[in-house]
Amino acid sequence: MLTALHTRWSRGIVGYSFKTNNLPWVIRFMKDQGLWAEVVSSDEYRLAELLGFDAAHIIFNGPVKGKSEFMDAVEHGAVVNIDSKRELHWLEECDKTFLDHANIGLRVNFCIEEYCSGESQCGSEDGRFGFSYERGELYDSIRYLRKIGANLAGLHLHCSSKTRSVHIYKAIASVVQKIVHEYHLDLQYVDIGGGFFGGMVGKPSFDDYFEAIYDVFSHDPLLKNVNIIVEPGMSLIGSSVSYVTEVVDVKKTKNNLFVLLDGSRIHIDPLMRKSSYTYHVEKKDNSIKASECDEQILCGFTCMENDRFFKLKAPELQPGDRVIFEKVGAYTMGLSPQFISFYPPVAVMQNGELKVVRRKNEAEDFLKSNI
Image (tube, rainbow, N blue to C red; front, side, top):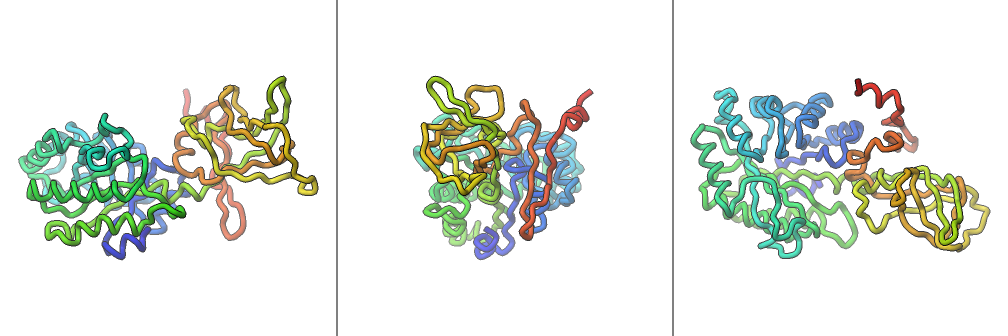
């Protein structure tokens, strides 16, 4: 990603999306690679500070920022992408000596469905973030910033899509171009958000995404010198994490064969929406020849009947066998609930050895934050 970005924008910024996986070890790793912090709440902003990020290397997004963190970010050089009207009014309470050179951006709400039919996540209902370009709220916000003497440094145009296609980013680039010319803007940066595929065979590459934007910006005199910010999450961490479960029990009922795992679907599919998983099986005893059996339903440890992963014909599973789910690094840790069993441990493979970077949470840990 860095190579693809810096080939086109030498000063291009990659902000790692905390919400995708906020494991402190992961965040520190991303920081060590030169990535900035992309945060969407006051809690995440404070976490970034505690993990050593200077405010000048924080991108502060999100629709419900805390006021004190918002003002701190504006006055200390963070990239602050405004998403609500109250944030505009908060600017008037900031130290005026910072406003004319602050890194303030506006999140743009536009109908991506009109540009990429059938590809947007919200369809005709529209996304809910930012200031509407079509309804004039964006222009009203630009005029407000000019009125109070605040520097409009950039635009933020992250769009959630079902396809993650290059067309989405072509549309973003074209909308940026339209807005810049219509409102005579002189921008320092354009934040195109995330939502990329990450090195999957047969899917767009980082080069494909960035070239689509560069092709528009590099030929436009008002955009050829603008810097680019990207905010990847899933494309960086999604494929790097596996979830290791072990068979605890096998039981037969009148109509089914159930395999009980010591893991749960809520740890890797918190919203219970997935229809398939990437996985492999490790047999405890490899001397036993793999055989096909009645259809096995793999289930989790919770007391919910729908805690069922998938059905498996072969190999026949026995207690002690492992089922390892792959490519589960995105959103799973942040969305996993403290339900029935507390957070599982996390280990990182370094130099051929496993290092525990988060121990299993215990009842004592749970009680510490309660009265």
